[in-house]
Image (cartoon, rainbow, N blue to C red; front, side, top):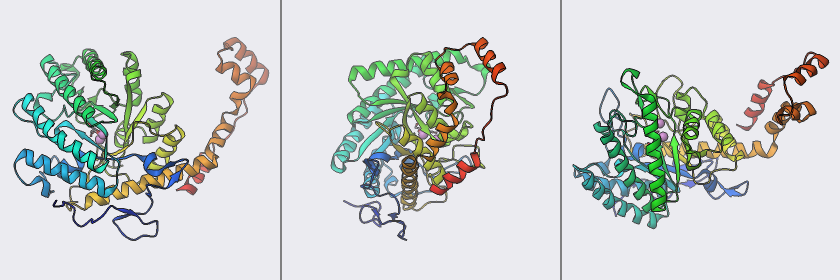
Length: 437
Ligand code: XLS
Ligand code: NI
Ligand code: NI
């Protein structure tokens, strides 16, 4: 079988921090045990199909810059098959355990839905065989119901019920193939579920419709006995001005309103968190606090650019703090770290895909090691405990247990006078954090 990445002869290896080999891991040692699990089990890395294999560098000012061998045969289903072969070659050479895809990434649309579904069946057969041959598993599947012009005004939130029906049909098939490939999960990212102007939008009705679509998906999932976890992926804007699933808090309120909390968790993307004006860690912590952390799209934005640049994660502060929250919460179950990231427009060499992923995997491996050390030494937990110690006193307990009212607290305050204040010690804590990085 001819190879698409022949320069990488074998699986990328762990060579340790002193290695100068750009095609080796310096920190990611899949078998190394940390707090009872291997690094591979903790991190559950996944490669995304769309950016990695279908992203060719185009932007709003220019077309593709990247030419890929597997994309060159011209015949659409041949391209689809070659791309699938190249994908599994990259997955195995990188040594990632998982992959993620949209229906339209793996097989292009044909003239009718029925023909499109046939194409999907053809390519899913190949994917299934390659999964079996390589041991690489599906972290999650999803639907692209945002690129085609029929979805210009949304899928589940489209003003037309016929478009809603199209989206539902597409999701039906995508859930089926995700089940066929034994996916651990299924993601709903509301690509164009949102609006650009309230003058032409009935927001309340749109949200009722979106909930209805998700309910149908849950019903169908039960019907076909798909056991994977459903996730919603928040994002505040882009492509629409106001996306309905704007951040974790907003998604949680939506899920509660429509009684869907038990059926969904969230897929938190780093770049979407920052677009929403939050840190990545904030979104993760919010999910942990509310029992809805599912999976992670591991990437980063650019401080100076206000859009979803989807870059490979390289910031060790970010990966450390993210892994600290994930580890503390008990780690991933169905989810993992999916690199929803693409190489830059000028990175036209196929081996840039390796550099991007190797760096990202090492960045998270360092994050994991740092976070484990932070947890073991417990300095932050100790400081937090101390800061909240007042809540362990009689007064604190009474308030927390709902046993005190305004009158009693007024009496307490009059008797005890001005509260004693304590320093927040942020600088000290930041200095301590730096010692782990
Ligand atoms: C786009 C999203 C998308 C989802 C999957 O901004 O991140 O890639 O992860 O539809
Ligand atoms: Ni994403
Ligand atoms: Ni994104």
